[in-house]
Amino acid sequence: MAQRLVCGLLTMCIAGAAMGLGGCSGDAENEAAAVAPAPAPSAAVVEARQSAVGIEKWNTYVDLHNAMLDRFYPSIEIYFKVFGNEAAFRRPARENDRINFTNSTLNSNAFIEAIDLAINLSVLEPSDHLDLAAANLALPLKDLWADMRELTAYFRGREYAGDSYAKAEQIHTRILAVYQEVEAAFPVFLEFLSAQEAARRENDIARMRIQGYKVLPAMLAVLTAADDIHIYFVKNEISSDTLIKLNKAAFSPFCDRLEAALKALEEVMAKEAAEKEGLDFNEVEVYCEAARQVRDMAAGVIDGHLKQQRVEALAQGSPESFNQEFNVLVKRYNSSIF
Image 1: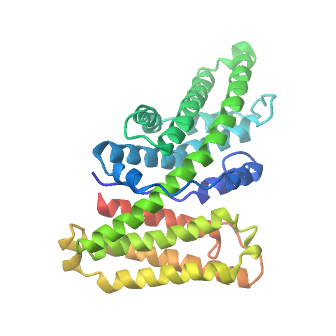
Image 2: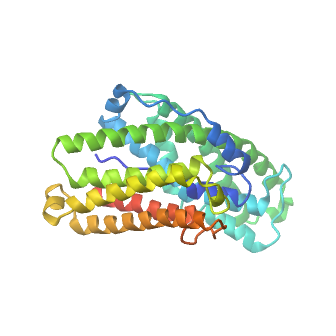
């Protein structure tokens, strides 16, 4: 069973920042950054994660993390925008506001399954700190999402017309309380997930090279270098609004490593070599082009910084645009190995 990789996280941080809410936004962003770094997992932990159960756990936790970015954070952002994040429930001003919220929670069976699977697998051996962090996140997340779905049914059934939003106010109080648990649990989960992923990548690259693979470890090395840039942005809170505080001397080596990794991939990338390693050469070419886009976006960030001016969030040269291309790169990698 192949092991999935984690999509980038800056998307969630930026989405939350627009509202001044949780996730990695505002004060919560500082709290997330203040979480003590997870210790590098031991060799025994890395080895245990290679078992069938370990790989199933890992893929489930990655799916949960990615589903939170794709499903949960966009929905909770709409929720707070429509109903407020204060103790007093704010009645929606327009019918479309209710519709936007209810639409955001529909077709979420895959998200619910990811939550349930994470809860069930987290208690199985072998267990470690990541399992505990996953359970501490998934359990309140399950309750929170159930409340949001209940509110969706309430609005779709137009029950508010009969109780003057009394039930909505009760659910709102529960959502605010449980959201605080999710907000506190996610950074811890992320720290352990990221620490294990970094160890896995190093282990995988070394193992593949020993086994004679060339294209696969080169692809993973590119992804690792790109992810290091993404992590630098997150940990240093670099966005389009704060680009001026980018430390060029500290950031440039990350870009150099990505350029070197990409060059190494281009040197070994050949149709025969890719197919020998079980890869579709066309997929590898698409991945390589996505990597070039990521490299160019990273270089654009330096250019934007040198101009000493604020850039639009999704304009070339912004960390947000880099993150968009990085998430594409992760998806291209996953599609090429599955």
